[in-house]
Image (cartoon, rainbow, N blue to C red; front, side):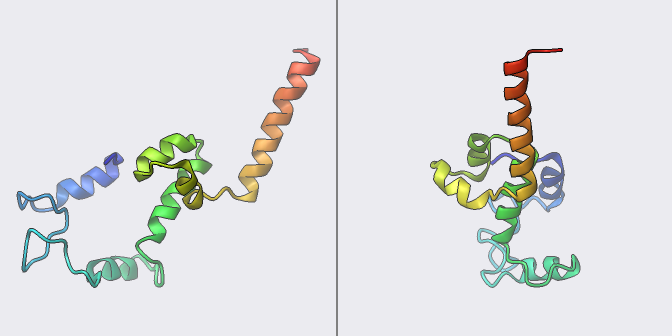
Length: 117
């Protein structure tokens, strides 16, 4: 799993239980913390993101990647997708990005047709 330095710092901050689970259950350290997502709910509420689902963060991550110019095949690898079709379901391009892309393409075509001044 590829993580940013900030995400890595959160994981490094966790107590090392010696297992593969980043947020271990206090009852059974070999299992993730609570299938009922109590930890996520606490984090979400403290961040003022009431109603945001944990899965929504994957969509946000993918959208931010695309909006910041990360190529779709790279986003697919980051999300662990084998098919670009699945990645496209996560990485929604907004109108602003589509308009900006159209402008860049138009400028490139104009330059190719007219040549540099």
